[in-house]
Image 1 (tube, rainbow, N blue to C red):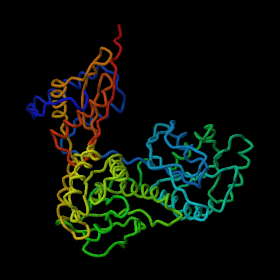
Image 2: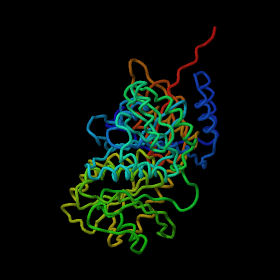
Image 3: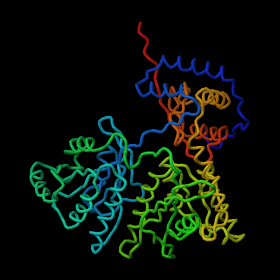
Length: 497
């Protein structure tokens, strides 16, 4: 199955409730022939919940890695993840874009934040490292502060330590590049930083990393205190976009007053600003995330800080409005910000700003760019606005409400399995090696975002999973929210004779 295959767009006729319940019972009984684990059983228990049940997966605790350039932060990230994810070079400051990863240790999952991606020059290094650490600490439940054991404590390290002491976050002092026992003795000099006992490790060789992670798990809470979902209160909206796209102007116009400094210089907003604003008869909490003030010696590092702050805002938000400047071509940076929203599982609204400045020629180019660059988010509501004048700002509210409702939507298990049976009957999975994987059972594991789990007898092609996702949208809507379709491949139990 590929995305180019023609599909039958006719609506699927579902059975009545009793038939659906009977189907679920029969499918679940059939699963008893397969090898299932405790997590499978928990998912199947969830399948019995009513259609109005909103299920939220607990927010994973966040562990941040901070330290000055070239102390081995990215090598430590790769060692913890068990795979080469972060770029490792001898040149300081090569980390880019992606700064958070899902990790696991001793059966516990957590989010790992890598903070190596800025390029300050020597003049700005102390302030830059401290600022980088400050942003990371805002995001984290606990911190690994990495120091090069061969260099010992530096003035930069001391700058960061002062900030860490004020953060009230648990901090583990990691003495990296301790490749042998002699280096362990040199780590003793790091006691002077006042962060407790240094933990000697070698990220490259793996030495001491397991002990370090054991200690980190003791510091991390079961559920994140910084990334957890809040229940109740105003719905939380992050305003995202590249510098100078109009984020602060939008916040000011929505608030009806000058809440945020607006300047033509890109990146003049220093910190995210949370504001409760009444719009469309409802109170919302808006988070403006214009990034940081750019200085000449921090030009290259500013994009990294903006990415880190964007992720911090997304952790607090339920829905993101990504502003796009229609007077300029859609950029790679626009697409990257949208992809950050998709990774975070937050709902998405696209705000096409400066619409009042759009002429006919630019409009034609814009539609072509949207078709080419934003095809993967064609399900996101689009609102054409002018943040400066407030034009069509009222259209933002129904788009936000639609996206949030979709993110909370749950498909009853009976209807979901009837839906899967119908589309598989009409469009079976292609044969692979003479075998055809079957979908044994389907359930919605959680909302926010809607996450579906398919129990299968074999691996489903990515194209086939995209096909199922597309049909879910056609049948149920899900306008404005990412959808996750996961698989659990299970084998039949061996029959005892």
